[in-house]
Image (tube, rainbow, N blue to C red):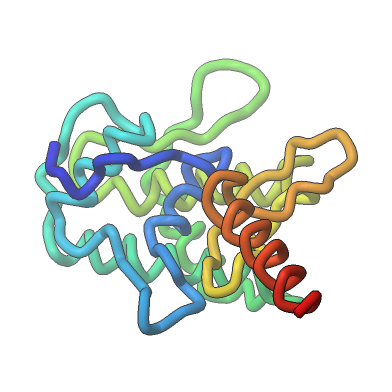
Length: 184
């Protein structure tokens, strides 16, 4: 595993949200960092988030397909109303490659037999999220420039930041600094 993932924390609450969060500082072009910059990093991410227990040999084409899907999913999650046309295309392709699990409730699966299956697995995981009750709890971090997405599991749905230790701490420090300057 490369040093690129040192300190990586899965904060999204699901594989699709963690995929979206492979872009750090999404809303700050000067700081934007794409953690899926090459096929090896995507392969490592698949293992990190538990989508598979072995590293896949991933092609550039699959990397680009996954990154395009990531951006589509982000736009669906933060737009009102969302443009579902690109998502529909990914889901139709996923169902063509999916198997029906032999149990109830019905569940479509895409075994990761090769890297070509990865975009389909991610599309079906995203559909599961978008159909779930958790969708109402999906939020975008309020940290300036952050853009990470998470599922708010707090009782009163009051979570504001991707992480209290990151964006939350920066916001508290800024409030403290601003309050000191207001007194002067």
